[in-house]
Image 1: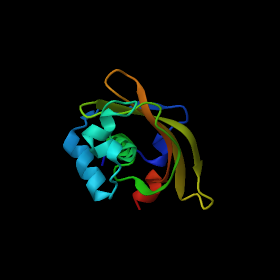
Image 2: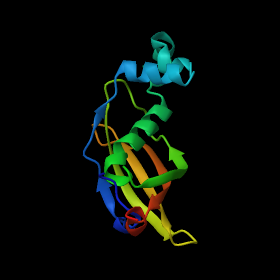
Image 3: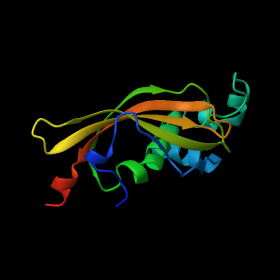
Image 4: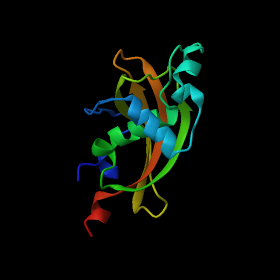
Length: 152
């Protein structure tokens, strides 16, 4: 288990996630197919060529989902009870096929549950492309195990 227990998170702590991922056309196509999202901006080369972007965009929900997956090993792998919310989602710049994303998480809040048995941690997650342009940002709130509760 590589995730962090509640006690191991510190407010203002920034975690630079080592994993990166280059997004392929097939990644985007499969995600759109699985989620039944047939938006031509994601799938139709000719349609997208006539937009302000000039080419197909990677589905923003895929970008966000991939970012969450990238964060798991250093944050919640084996130490999470549940994801509670994703808030303040932004996509300030597009992601294109062939872009490589990397992610950082900054702990913005933590508090114990009312029974003191678990903790709630909020992280601001930022996703960057290979040029360090911010392409997605959101707040992720999780219900986290406390170390002493996990060992009993």
